[in-house]
Image 1 (cartoon, helix red, strand yellow):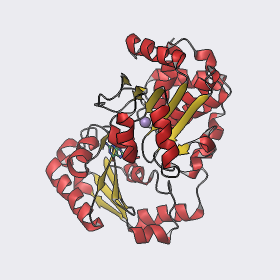
Image 2 (image 1 turned 120 degrees about the horizontal axis):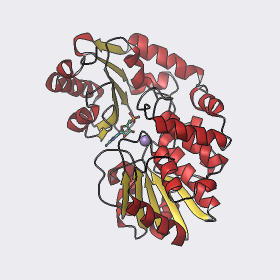
Image 3 (image 1 turned 135 degrees about the vertical axis):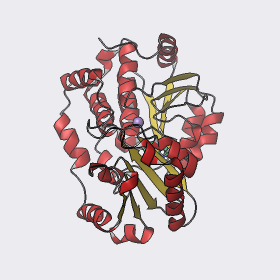
Length: 347
Ligand code: 5GP
Ligand code: MN
């Protein structure tokens, strides 16, 4: 039996919404990752098993091709593609689950419609400092993925039997991707109790790993080599490394959504590097990804310099301006936040 982490009052309130609701919408954040998609689709399959047939999953924009195999992924409504239908779903659903995000602006252009919608909103998430825009907020940063939160939520409602194989596959996917295939944030013994239960539901965890991590294009792998060989700058004294890729470089390697996923983590395999930043020049803004090991709060760095946030060890933000200015902002942050002092504590 798992420890009761989610407050009973939240479970009971959300359970009532599940039982009484007729139409459901599940919304997740922009640039949805494995956890965003896994938790959303996991909950979709569960609700379907409960006999609910009006359930939709909505993402603000598209997601990487290596998540398209997930059961239910083909029916996800993408706001960028179908804005009117998406807004209609938000306005007309009885219950709206907000998964894997803690602030309305994380759904991009959908935020105003979401805030104004009359449906009962339930947040299930694991980012720190959740904003209070939902009737029920289940947010526990100590839990390493929203997928794990979904599993716990369903079990606590006494509905473990309604987790079918497709739901289990989706839940496992997010648990795997939010922990870098169980290489960080993954020391909680109950995580493995849950994985055991998912395997009993019939998932093939090794196959899921291959479907997510071993389906890259040749050009993506070459771009990774280029980024490491030519574009990685190491700041040894600060235990930090930076990788940047410009729009022109992305084009050279036929970049498509998801191709740079994981690049930010690569410098952390260098002995002595504990803070890694990846800056990518997108079409309309500059995307910044930050990762750290140990105590250095990269969410604080993201908040101060890149208008972002996230987890202590994995966060992100944005920059509006030319790429060299984003790099200058990063270097300013490095000198001000002084990771030299913060980092290296664990050596
Ligand atoms: P990634 O670098 O993979 O895009 O994001 C890592 C984590 O940082 C995400 O799980 C999310 O928690 C957070 N994050 C990424 N981008 C943003 C952003 O623009 N704003 C905020 N508040 N958090 C972000
Ligand atoms: Mn997550």
